[in-house]
Each structure stands twice: as structure tokens, then as C-alpha cells.
Image (cartoon, rainbow, N blue to C red):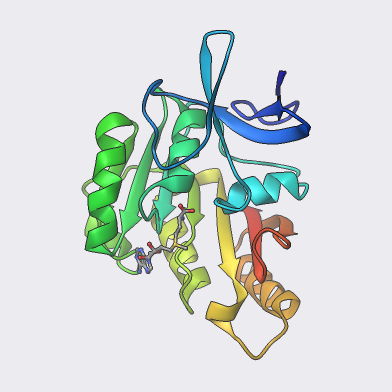
Length: 226
Ligand SMILES: C[S@@+](CC[C@H](N)C(=O)[O-])C[C@H]1O[C@@H](n2cnc3c(N)ncnc32)[C@H](O)[C@@H]1O
């Protein structure tokens, strides 16, 4: 049993055995696994299970995200793409018409990402620090969504700096906030409020904040619009 999500194009729900609601994306590169994800075939199509334990946007969708800005055909600037676990599902959703510019500072991780991007032609791996958006100005174009998952104390600053350079008018900023990276002494809810205030102060409208527990404790996803 497979059903497309009613609100989010490119996102599917699959029933496997007794577990009715497994999130999935349709594999852009059938036969290629991007990490150790579970793959299921339905009516000749291949779907990749998108686990909320492995990927924060998947957890946010399961926790009731109202608007998911990742859509077919869009351009994304992804800060902290790592080896491409979450990005591989974004890559399935944006499809061949879309593109993901992936910024990652750790060389070892970029090497793993290159294996993924060799198969997924819509991912452009860029070894750089997201703290210096000007360093990739010759590669990255204006985008529809900036997504940040860098787990750094200045993660909100990093998001805003990049949005100022690369986000189109009317585009979306999305951040996976790791509360303990910003302030371990404050309750996570307070840290999310601080992050919201900072994003609002930079001129963006907060659409929603979704806490990711029990999948990812002390993390939330904030979606904002420019
Ligand atoms: C939580 S992991 C990202 C996981 C990934 N987004 C996923 O869901 O598959 C955070 C990543 O951000 C990277 N990172 C940290 N600081 C960064 C910076 N200044 N610029 C770019 N990447 C950075 C780390 O090396 C790490 O790979």
C-alpha cells in the first residue's frame, strides 16, 4: 500500500506489515542506495524509506509540519549537508529539474558525499565553511530554500548570512536547531524562542516551529519565509 502525501508533492506513505505509516521518497536513481536505507518496490517503482530517526525533516513531517518548502523542481542551498543522508531524500523530491548546492566543511564527510552526488546529478558538493557565503558565490545561484543543519553555536547567524546572499524574495529559510549547541544551560523551548526572535529580527516571518522529540531530543525545525 502506497499513498502520496496530500500536502507535500514527492512525499509518500507506505504500509509495510503492521507499520502503517512509513515515510518514503521515490528513488531518483533506481538500484542505487545512498546510505543503508530500506528500499521497497511497489508496482515497478522503487521507494526509499525516510526514517524520522535518521533525518530531522522526516521527523518534522511526522510531528505535524504544516508547510514543507522542499518541492519538485526547486533550488536548495543546504548548509551542513554531511554525507547526504537527508539530502538524498531532498534529491528524490526536487527531481531532475531541481538542484541542491551542498555546503560541508569536513573533508572526510565530503568524500562520502561525492559518492552520492556522482549518482545523484542534482547534488553539487561544495567543500567550504557556511560561515563564508562569499566563498562559493561563483558556484551557487539564487535559491528557493536555504536549509541549515550545522549544529554550531552560531547556527542561526549562519542561516541568516546565507539567506541574505542567496535566498530569492518569497523564498523559505529552514533550520534544524540543536538547542544544546546554542546554550546547554537553557531549556530547549527557550532556545527555540531565541532562535525565532533572531530570525524574525532579520526580517523573516516564522511559519512554524516543530519540536522533534521523541525522534531527536532537544532539536526543532523552524520554517520561515522571506
Ligand atoms: C548534524 S550534521 C548534518 C546532518 C545532515 N544534515 C543530514 O541530515 O544528513 C552537521 C554537519 O554540519 C557540518 N558543519 C559544521 N559547521 C559547518 C560549517 N561552518 N560549514 C559547513 N558545514 C558545517 C558538520 O561537519 C556536519 O557534517
